Length: 437
Image (cartoon, rainbow, N blue to C red; front, top):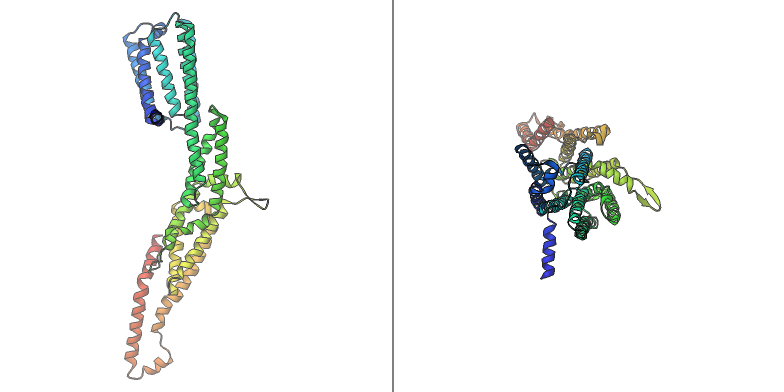
């Protein structure tokens, strides 16, 4: 029962909302107790209306910042973090100087409670944010608490030292627990089954881990950074292998098994493959970094792959897949219409997603040339075939002088109308789609 309660309390303490509330409550208690303490009177004198207003506004700002710490902590600006750390260091140094100079005698209970509350507030900040000053602020208030206890009785410094040791151990356990939980998750993802979804999740974790590793040297244990680097290397190699297999994985998607539409419109595979290509292009910087830092070794020879070449390979595989799909049509005209619609749709998607710089003008020129070739073949096998029904051969010309002339012309017009009804909607759809694109 006791072990179960301890596990429950540990899980409870790992929740961000709990630490946010603890920090807010500690800040409120600390500010109220400090206002009533003898330390405030020594430093700032007796209260008056102006001091009450200023202290109330200052306390309100501090409490709001602690309560809504999740908003301003999202800033990754190094300048903001540096200025904040410098400001906190300056304030604590100035306060420490005047506090040691002015305050004499034994402190009251309000001073002790305020220092302890501010130390807990700093601990909650170190649990939630990573601006770089939270741990220093925690040690500052613990140091102030230790000094105040020593002024009451020298032996009480043991209590202050115990608080400092507990805070360090608590911070270390929280740091280790959270960090290794993240690393275990990254390890599990790296060992997972290969899939496109897994690739892009790995990229997100790799980018986050790369951003955090530079900050792990601030932690209490260097082994965490070593473990993080090991996991990052495993992720990098897994990302490299998955990315190089992307051209095969893309054609295992459910859309690849769908039957082509009867009217020759673009295939769902083209849409899905281009969406994967777009996601890869958005992570181009990370993928190029992975290919550069984790090259593949074949028979002792380092082989460096190119991001652009891999993208071109995927597009070539997509074209071959669509060509294979076009053979599902019996009519040759529909095959070429199918290829034209897919080429135009792919080109329109690439332009709308601002991927022209990646594929370059050469790809667009080749695609246009292939489209024109498909268009010529489509015209040959569609409208030319329809017009063939209106042509008269020698036997038909001889028959025009007879009684069967009317029947021959009616039969040819009937066949012409039938073929025209089949090809006209498809051709008109193609024309409308080309105008839109």
